Length: 232
Image 1 (cartoon, rainbow, N blue to C red):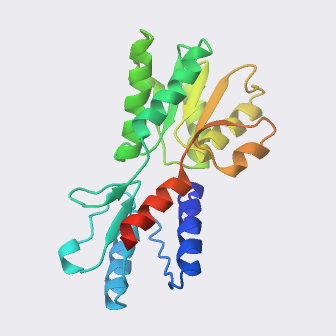
Image 2: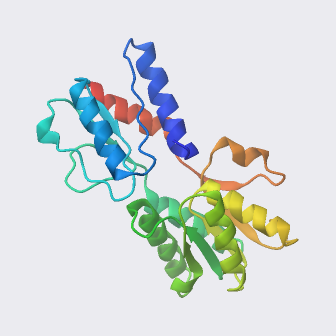
Image 3: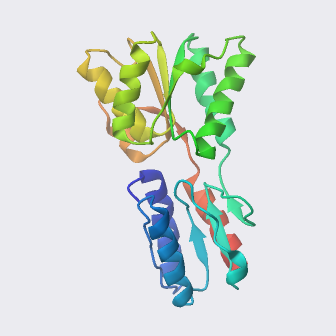
C-alpha cells in the first residue's frame, strides 16, 4: 500500500463498499508471498463475499476452485485467472516515449520496474514501438531496472546520465521523483537541461517545483470495473 497508485485504487474501492454497507478488510502483503498466502487463508476462514486482489511480485494466483466467491485481479495478472482489470501499459509506454520523441529526443533512457513484472515489460514494449516508428534504434543499455521506488529513480538517473541520455521515462511517478531529486542535486534542470516524464499521474506530481509530466492511470475507471465484476 506504500505504492500511491495502488493506495488510490484501494481508497476508491473502500469508499464505495462502505457506502453500500459492506465491511472491508484491507490486507497488505508487503510484497511477501508467504504473508500474501496467509492473508488468503484468513480471508477464506472469515468467509468473505469476494476478493479484489492486487498481487505482489512472483505471486501465485488464488486457487479459485477452493472459493465459491468472485475474485477480481487488478493491474497484475498471475497465470490462469478469470477476471482481470487493467489499463493498457503498452499504450502508456508508447505515449510516454512518443511525447519525448516529439520534443526532439532520440536518446531516451528508462527507469523501469522489476524485470519480472508484466506491467513494466509492457511499458518497455510500448517504448520500443514508439522508437521504431521514428526510426530510432532500440538500445537495451538505456533501460535501468528498478523497484518502482524513490531510490530506484536516484540510482537510475545516476546510471543513465553516464549514458548521455537527453530525456528519461520513469515507469512510475515515485521513480520519477527520485530522478528529479538526483538531477537537482547535480545542478541539472528539468526541463531546460533534460526532459522527464513519469507514469501514474499521482497528485504529488503537481506540487514539485516543476510539475511532472506523467501518463495518467484511470484509477476510478479501473475501480469501477472491478466493482462491477465483483457484484454482477
